[in-house]
Image 1 (cartoon, rainbow, N blue to C red):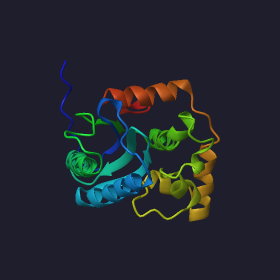
Image 2 (cartoon, rainbow, N blue to C red):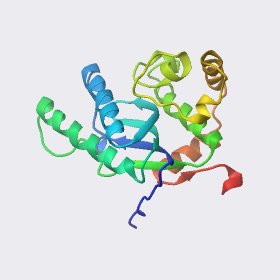
Image 3 (tube, rainbow, N blue to C red):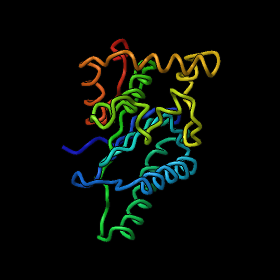
Length: 206
């Protein structure tokens, strides 16, 4: 069955996931990770996408973004795919794309689920047993959102900003969220939504 067309208005918050073609490694070293973050910054600005959270894994990446124009995520993800494939060919040889043919997107339709999804993204390296805690992983937004490290790539979401009346209060409140364990139901909801390009919303909004 063909997938439904995606049509997101301005103001939509999305969880985006793109995986390597046939599960292949996307980022071979820190130079490639730094270059990809630079491309994220460049093309998020060009495409009117505000990035709130991210993580770069070995064979995929996650983003939490808000669209400032209708369906602008499409041009954003297309530009990323084209630019990264180009420099991959130069560095590693070969032809074709380095990504799966279609990225996954899940609309976040709940303030509570927005923060849950943001934590889900930043805890990916912990669940993958790459590190013991989120702050030990360099290639995510955790250090900015939880510890206050400067990251020009990020534009905080209003839901995140409402966690505290000042920066220190906000950072403390956000770190405290990481002391709360994920329920299996919440993990399943997030995974099901991103796999099926579905909306992640609270039960009362269903």
